[in-house]
Image (cartoon, rainbow, N blue to C red; front, side, top):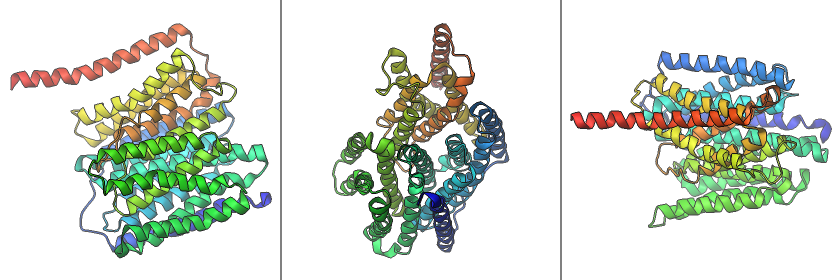
Length: 482
């Protein structure tokens, strides 16, 4: 089996790509006359400049991490894959199941291609691919369509970003486990599961008239038909099946109850509690691989819900993905990170920044007086990337784990059950991916002194306070004039 481990990504690529193309064809047959929001030329320029800067950063990262051109290649692959995903998501069709299957299929295909192409530098290559794809989705889906409340497009963009993050982190955790147990194929098992979920969603798209239950059964049977043999014969691990089912149940049960509950908030809190309890159980299983299995189960259920037009709170999708990056960060920087995680006051501050940063970005975006899509995208990228780059420098790897943990914990307080995906969720994913991507650069830079760190925190705090207060001042002035 070890000598043929490369068959898994190839099989996953073939199955997921064919399913995605077929799903696009089915979606086009059910398309409507509605048109998506236009993408302005200025917004395309913003995306091109951002991608060029990321490629340059990827080249520097390749020098620092001794991975040559792998990160830059990942940026290019992610940009191309993100454009394809954006084109699929922006389609106007009556078939929720077909468009969801296409999103899962092309997302899985992108990770399979990255896995096969970006060898000997998988960590930076896969994370760069996902980050670039998420930036592309931000520029070409979320920003143009957030003003017209295109609920399905925005939810699918959030689902795709969380799924890409989870699948990439799962492969990397699989690589870590493969090194420890000497079985190379373990890393690519997740790609097979993702491809199986795609096939299940494609089958569900042909069951539109049979309702949600039939779709859920189709996806579940298809996924389990692959998960059970993999867990029993390939991995020989009993928790494999149980963790995927546990992740699916932790989201599926609250969604079922939400349709019958008189209190709409109760299923939301129940869902978060079940997620936290499930993640607590799976966090240390199989050296983090168990958490990847559980999170993948969560997102598969999210895909089933999306195929039936059911709204899933974005925080449910991003919460597990962010904790998965947190778990991966602990493993990747084991020499710099204590096993118990954050433990001093700088770590406490980093957790607080992780919690508040996406919320501040959300406030800036929703309350901004900027009306142009390109200016909104620029503000969004600057608000997320600039603090992440600064914090990547002034914080050491051990304290940076606190930022990942804070970004995940922040999802608990950002429940958004509306049709629009939470800006908080997408901002958290972008910030976490950027922080993780450029962590190897810390070893090449001189560690800042305590004075530099204190001054940096004071400056960041001052900027945040001014940026929050200034719009209030303008609003107050307008109110007095009126």
